[in-house]
Length: 212
Image (tube, rainbow, N blue to C red; front, side, top):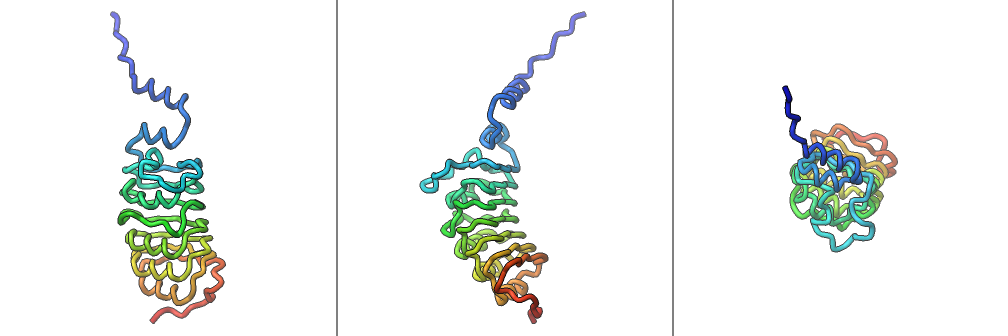
């Protein structure tokens, strides 16, 4: 007896076509995987030189509303991305922005970002205390922050973190300009703090007495 062949699986054919013939980029994954939960990129998600006048639409295909983990280190993201991040990906818990030179101390968040738990701004040499003050206010659930090799970060950033990020567990302040008094206040305010890196923090003494 003759058994009819199975119907052609068009979705499978399209999947092979897209995999073999389209460039492997974040933009493609955004189109074909709208429910993607993480992204990591070594390519620039934005054209170089477009540092002003960008809108939320500029980031479509780079981040997605459902994602909870994004690594955009060493890319061309700018202050405008920070402005829209909380509305573009409201479920984001982990955001890695290491060595993004387009992010400056003028960056501000448009809305609160209660889901964000980990933020790395290490090697972002243009960020400073004013930006960290805004981050601390907008992101009360932060558990870890890396500000290593950010030379404009001072004790003022620590005071902002101590005032608003009471769940903080880990801090990397290597090469930052922090001082003893701010560290003592941080320790007194943040009972969950378990790890703090202070490599090459020249203003910090080698030993401290515990706060009363």
